[in-house]
Image 1 (cartoon, rainbow, N blue to C red):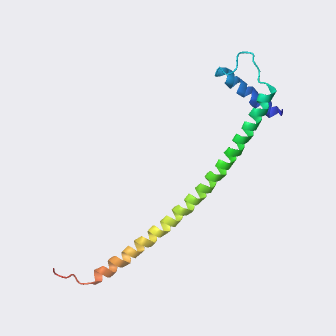
Image 2 (cartoon, rainbow, N blue to C red):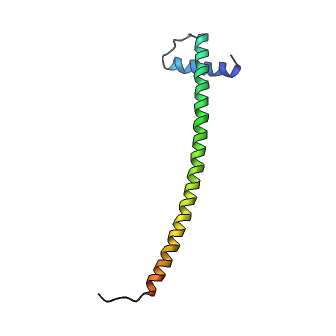
Image 3 (cartoon, rainbow, N blue to C red):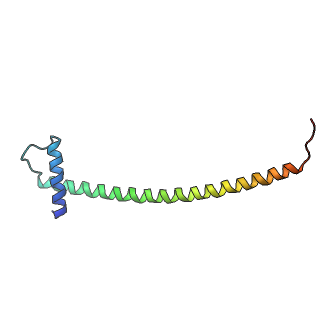
Length: 94
């Protein structure tokens, strides 16, 4: 196992012992380390994928927000033009 994995396995052993999953003095078996390494690799891959998806969603949100602001400005301008046009017509008595 790599040095980093040994550190992670050690931390996981401490957590497992703290949660009652390992008894005092009991070590993780070699197959536990391999299984942990596989699960850790899967977790890292999922984390990276989620970060990439999150960044993509943030960019999409920023673009949509900018587009929304542009459209809101256009609607305000159109409203002003309509109000000005309506003001030019004489009021009719009902």
